[in-house]
Amino acid sequence: MSAACTIESKSMKSEILSSPLRVGVIGVGHLGSIHAALWNEVENVALIGVCDSDNGAAKRVAEKNGVAVYDSPEQLFADVDAVSIVTPTTHHYTTAILALRAGKHCMIEKPITSTVEQAREISAIAKKNNLKIQVGHIERFNPALLALEKTMLKPLFIESHRLAQFTPRATDVAVVHDLMIHDIDVILSIVHSPVVQIDANGVSVVSDTVDIANARIQFENGCVANVTASRISQKQMRKMRIFQNDAYISIDFAQPVVEVFKLIDSRENSAANSGDNSGGQVNNPVPTMLLGQIEKGKINRTIVYEQPSIPQINALKRELELFRDAVLNNTNPVVTADDGVQALEVAEEIMRKISGVK
Image 1: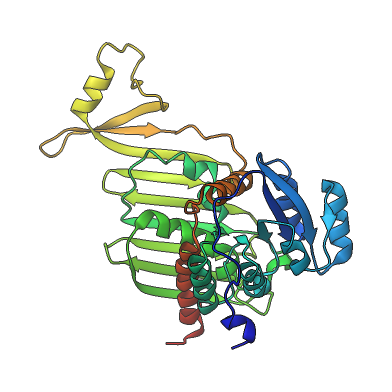
Image 2: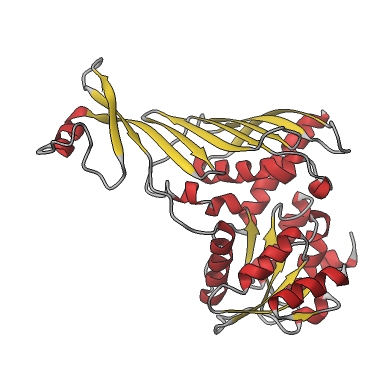
């Protein structure tokens, strides 16, 4: 274990900060440059500067956003309260260790680190020093998922497909860590039950790591998730289907669109429609359409179709805003380091199953 692994933050435990929050970005590739631009738009935040091993890229992003270029993360830490870590995944751990040693809060892009052991370590250091880590599982902030905040989710079966065309940009990690981990995190956040069994298969096609994978995840409460991810598809797809006793829910993260088909007690439907002459439309803030009735059993039930309204937000900007709030108000981030650890634990178990390691 390297010396950096054993060093904890020497700074005083973090206190509630006054705004504006001073932020820096480490790593200004494609996604890091977007972080920098959006931080410039977030209220109560001052983007101080950027840092990247590619000094030319850092200068371009800095000039575009009117901020300073820093030659090293250590120099940047001296002037900021928090950082976005948007380096390649293989550098997340070492960069986060440096930031935590300097007493800085960290917004870390997913996956949190390359290994579970690394993730657990930085999570423990952050907790000990009251430093915030939010992991960039951006689908948690996707408008389609947010549209379901008031919907009771009790899934029994989940099916997800995340397909992308090939790009050499993210081949430093397998597709499980690159793409599938988005759906793993979302599924863990809605099932709320321990994983008891995982079966998986995967193939390396165009890179040295797994490019297409499928996993079957079984939970203690009986829910099963069938998860597929590919980065060698001819078409793009980011869809999830949730099946439960009283509903079928379809989520299209890319559009974004949500469709809900659910069963309700016909007596509820009669009450909702009392005095309504709209031709079958239920009085409901969500656009609703009646599709038919099921008359078997003791209680007649009505099949209802709803398309919840989608909030008009930028998912990444909202993610940054909520990280800001967690730091300024000393509250837990929406996607904690522990959430990042759990998603990575499942991803690593999937990779072990694919490789045949027990």
